[in-house]
Image (tube, rainbow, N blue to C red; front, side):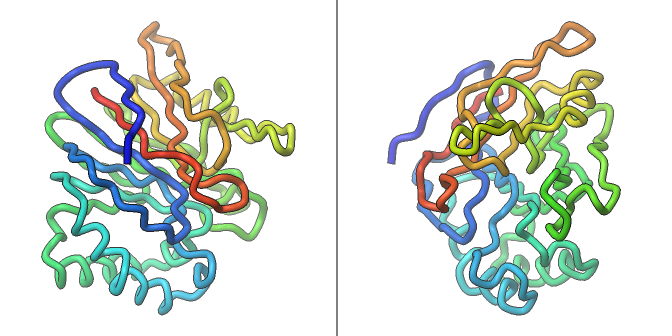
Length: 235
């Protein structure tokens, strides 16, 4: 598989995807960090805790073991209902330890990790309608640490066409998230959620006059068919 190459720096190569919905397409390229920006749960069992956990154990973690990378960062999305249970992270860590990749896989849910001097922060909050995981009716807000370098969100900000769906002729990007980014010092926002939002680099000039890049990295279309290759980013 060939991947689009987007270059805006040196030192760290990131391959980013989102909205797998159980699709475990191979990633053959190697990199420093693979980012999975939410909605990994299969559609057929997304609401059933034990079934999703079994899928993680039987299929998802073995797929992770095939990835040629030093680090895998994964955050939940609005379809990942299992992540709303407080004990999910403990159950996940048990599976990761069983496969001996607990040092390689980093689950970020309102939390962060520093890799090679870059701080990655994962925020799953989104503006899906009532009833979805981490959606606005639960009073979720787009908080992240002030020293964040790479912000991973499931929700795209309202910038360019990252959150615009041509099929519905409707904008789904978040103004609230955009305003939080404008007031930040980040250099990169990786997001998904809106499957057919523009996958081209979107640029935000921050209030401090620095520039941040935004990439929608979903891999499926609105009909849940594989439509996009993983996005390769260098920082």
